[in-house]
Image 1 (cartoon, rainbow, N blue to C red):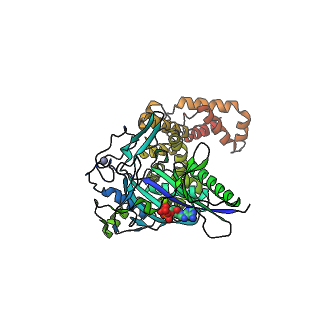
Image 2 (image 1 turned 90 degrees about the horizontal axis):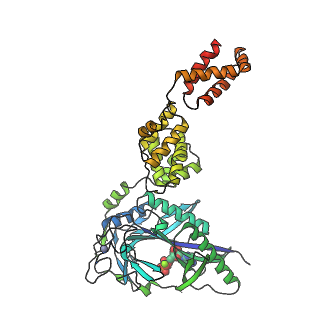
Image 3 (image 1 turned 135 degrees about the vertical axis):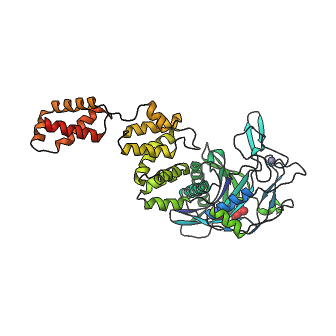
Length: 470
Ligand code: ADP
Ligand code: MG
Ligand code: ZN
């Protein structure tokens, strides 16, 4: 069998983080009671008129700026007509002829993957299939959605997966989308074709619709590429069609033949005026953008943090923001990264709610400083982070409640020192003979006995005095 190169172009849909829907004042939320956030506009009652939500436009421009797209100064809205029960109006308001963002790209593993466009449109409702029949929830209808379309530049399932992860991260950092694939805020259509290795004429593609997890992006593309190459090798031809990925069997199945743009009878929506975007609008949005993950990566590399640690911190913006606050609070970056990776992320990974952190950076910094001053032990710090995190208490409260501040009892220390000296006559002789190395051994024995009840500096001072007198 000949070897084949896989060619992939993606269409990534991301729901925007607006308060309200794109053409009405209904709330844009997830998980509310079915059909509780709907109105005549988003369920398409005759005569209802759409009004554009400018925040949705701003977030689309923010996405475009993050990916280096050219921002259109003039944009229009088109009706894409088709019938499906989740689309009550029987048309979707979208952008075919004048998308908001054009070009741009994302670098993945050193390769630049070009974007074709990013356009803004409205999401459709959701069908809920169950034994008793099908229900329709229109809460999602009219939620602002961007579609990010790539050129067919991707060459493997891994690269495509990595690309989506990069796109997701950038959108989250820019505050454009929450990027939650498990809630459907991010959905991927993969266009896949194969061509014999060494040739450069693209084969016929199929489109796999609505992939909703990173794992499935990889397995769906791998299955589809293998299916196509085997088909061609056995003398068959790939037909251009829309397919769906079945998660249980790991296979793709034909859904329908591919529709063309003219099948949708696109035409300009007469209810909404074209939108003019000025240079000042674009500048304002650009200046409000948070530092991108790529820029943060460069900054972190300058701190002398390993590449793996940079990725770990950057993988979640909540963690990265926290890390930045800890560094800004005066903790050395290398120390901060260890504490964040260790004490904080251990709790975060175990937490159910990952939408925020119940520990303040101030308390975290204060705790690290107490460790440096030997007022609490490292283990005491770990314990206090745990209590602060899961019991939602302040550092002062948990230090008090769990008695984590080292309170020195001089009698106890004297006793421990005396006991250790008495138990080690040989080491004492060595010390008296001028062997300074055994001092460390004595310190270790005392610390073990005192289990965090004394600061190192106190142990050293008391021990030195006792040894010289012994
Ligand atoms: P349509 O609008 O009909 O879906 P487009 O030309 O906009 O077609 O392409 C849609 C997606 O298909 C894009 O992401 C593009 O990169 C991808 N694509 C186009 N040709 C191929 C091909 N031969 N193999 C893989 N992907 C392709
Ligand atoms: Mg398409
Ligand atoms: Zn509405």
